[in-house]
Figure 1: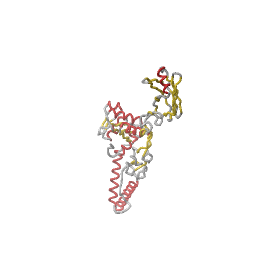
Figure 2: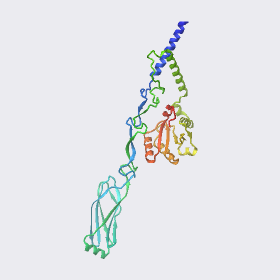
Figure 3: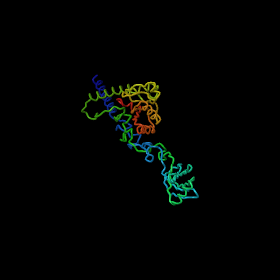
Length: 352
């Protein structure tokens, strides 16, 4: 009888030791136990290049450009009761534009003028424009002849053109701090929540190699660990299950996880699905690869609700979503957070 009890005791101890070792060694396979992974949005660089991240230095954010057209030469002379004018211009910008040239001569308080037809000034080329000022009175023409030297005022009015450097957007590419990792180059591992342990449970300082703890400690630790594991498994939820949920149940789960509340029907029609406890709009998308148009839609809804902060929850986001977020911040001052469902699942407390 004693031998049987001893065998049972040894088997129990062996099982407990095995479970303890397995639990201790179960480091997260995705981050190799570090609790961090390289930021997938900036590939560890800490910054991203946004195509529309800064005001264009050529048009100063206006989206339009006044082409740089300089006067190369100009001349005017009397010609049988008229004044002939000839001007040579050079368009020094890489974009063509149209414009008109006006020449004016003042004689004793009387102005005589002529304007050219609408003329094309090709990019990076020289263009010659000729004008003829007519209708000059006999007396004024004689005055000009007597003076021999006269002044001709010549002005060029050129059309504004879409800025070729920013395609008319007013914004140019810029390297900015990655909004997902705040410039660190890495983020918390979504698989383990930053603990470094598979499943998210961290066991710090557990060393079963020594004999100091004793059998009783091992048994207690194993029992507690098993209990916690069972409890977490019972209460846990998976991405797969959330993907299969009806849309209304999925939204309720997200809002409950964020301690938020549902939006009114009028807000829902605008693209707002709920609000955080602080009253900030939340858009919930049961989809992958959420893109820039969703960001812009929430930004528009935030503008109608006079909100400066908002959140979008989805399974994943496309690269254009970050650009949309940056543009909303730069153009309108809106701070839109992008939260994945995986982050909500792994979070122990409210994220926002």
